[in-house]
Structure formats: structure tokens, C-alpha cells
Picture: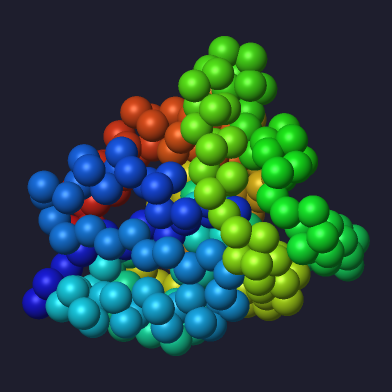
Length: 237
């Protein structure tokens, strides 16, 4: 039985946000990092499961950051038997508020009219922590470049998917697999309190708060992120 590691990217990024993690872990075990920007969450889940089937990967530890975390919940609905464990990073179980939905749909209209050129300025102040914005210009530049790789159509599709996603909070008590909840100490979008609530609701979770990181914790503090993941994998695999 082939076991592996599946990295699930954030919005509006792509699998290249996981380049360092994929390169590091690929020599140790099978690794996938599917691309699903623009798809609905059910479509994205089918794509991930299809890529796992093609790779002969029967079970995996799923690592999802932000939108990737929402996709973990969708994958659990469809195929809980494929889970060895789960890593929920800088994400939340709840659905959007009504105001959140309106904001996403307004952003969607703007992207379709104007393209993605304005998105870095619109998103990065909340995606990156204070330390990164003040002290790590190379991380800011990398995140900006990743955003600009997206097409307006894909960004619009994912904004709709995020606005329409269901509340996954009721799933948490039944997710009986080892879970690691990671959150950047400076994450203002899905703050540490949100992560603590999620960890408390999961049956077998451990929580780590990563210093000097905001919402894109793996890019902002890759060493702390990788160390946390290594420790968890040593338990699970």
C-alpha cells in the first residue's frame, strides 16, 4: 500500500507555493501537489483523488493551507478512507459570513473586469504577517509573483467556490485521524484563536503557533513549518 503526502495550495496561489516542501520531502516519500485554482471544491477534490489514483497513492497525509484546508474538509466528505492524517494550516472550518460572501463576490467582479494586476496590493497586506512585510522583501516579492501567475478566470472561479463553501465545523468531531493544526502567530485572516477552536473540536489534534508568520506560514517561516511537519509525519507514517 503506497502512502504519501499531498500538499493543497492556498488562494489565489498555485502548487509552486509548495516548491521547497515538495523538493524536501520528495526524496523521502511520494509527494503530490495538485493544481485546482478555478475549480469548485467538489471538482478540486475529484482532481486530487484522481491524481492520487494515477500515482498509485492509496493513503496520504493531506497538508492544506487556507483554501487547501477547505479542500481537506471536502476530501473528508468524499473519501475519509484515504486519510492517514491531516494538517490544517492557517485555515478555518466555518463558512463565510454574509459580509465575507459579499466581499468575495465584489472582488470576483472586479477581477473579471480589471484582471489580476491589482490583486497583490489587495491581498498581501492580510496574507503576510507584519514581520514578513517589514523584514522579508524576498518573501513579499515571491508571493506577489505567485498571485500574478493566476488567470482572472481561475481567480473568479475560486472566489465563487470559497463564497459558496459549506460550514465544515460539524465534521470536526468525526475526523478521527491524527491532526496537526498550524497557524502563523501574526495571521489576521485566520488567527490563532480560530486555530485553537478547531484543534479543540478535533478528536486527535495538536496545535502549533508559528512565530514571525502570517497567513502564508510555509513561505514566511519555512523552517518552523517544515520542522512541525517532520515531527507530525514521524508520528503518523
